[in-house]
Length: 427
Image (cartoon, rainbow, N blue to C red; front, top):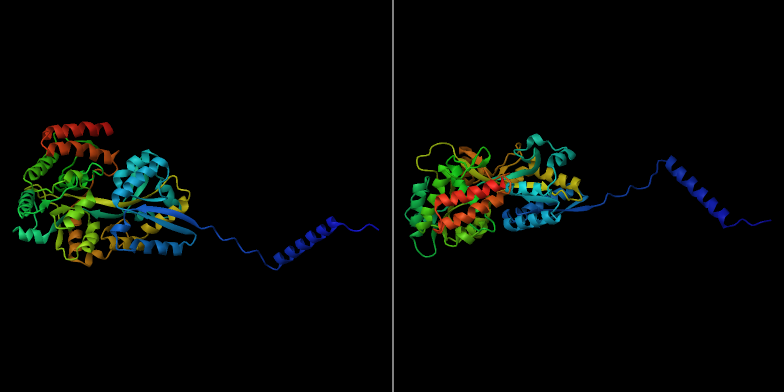
């Protein structure tokens, strides 16, 4: 009689296992589901250094608890470093999955194909877009959402004003020039006004120069196109700044100063006045708790009584088109824009929320914040660089001849004609 070989035994074993599996299924047993894989997304921004220590990480920790399959790596740095990193990442396809954005960068990044369409991203996570206070659109598609918005008021060092005999903060250009001159007369290395005109990061043209145009209801555009020549509002501002420059009322070295340098000059008591973001209030108080400073509306043209534009900037957010995890990135954006989290961010950063249903409490906690809200209500948000093509390039193309004008190398008409010609080339 032939013995039964290994093949027969293997066959019987397979049949037995099949019967066992069938019986288990009949009894309602199933193998445990395999856990979803954990993915890590990166989030680059300049927000963390400007918020109270650990505040942004705490919000991210909560997000990770609510979404255990998503880890978030914060990539934090100063504004200028974040800008450089984002631009370089766009060119090489290595941007963070979620990116903090300035509205001035958006047009260029979209033209490079670096940003994802947020209309699609938010639809994917069913976010109620009607709650958004604003969206930055290019070609009728959304590429940036303002998370929180900051106005740029006038900051004054009240101790320096008092020492200089200035009894109240200036409200018009004549008073501002007089205050700047009086503070500069204190001697030493103290000057009345600090402006950053670095060509590496030329946003001083937006925040410190054109802001004075908007404050008096003026515009640098006409019909969406550059309008610098034969523009009385722009010409009056640049000639006004030149008069303060010639009077020695502006901090030396302005041509190489950037926005962080401006804040340092003010915080260290070397500048009596600056136009700056509300986001830096926490930073200033932390750097010098004894500094007595206050905020005010920007000085306007003498005799101007109408509503003025209030310069503002947003902490915007977007998603890299090259992200390997667009669904997870969209969840993070939706989380930051949700009413409760957006309220928390607004309170932490002393900003105005990007979600219309958010109700921040910070404006009731400090007289300075109440003043900020009053300034915000008194006019209208104005930043004509937001969404323009090559916005940073436009600032640079104004900054370069503006420095020549301040140095006395060209006339004001040559400045405006040069800038107008170069701006038109970008349109």
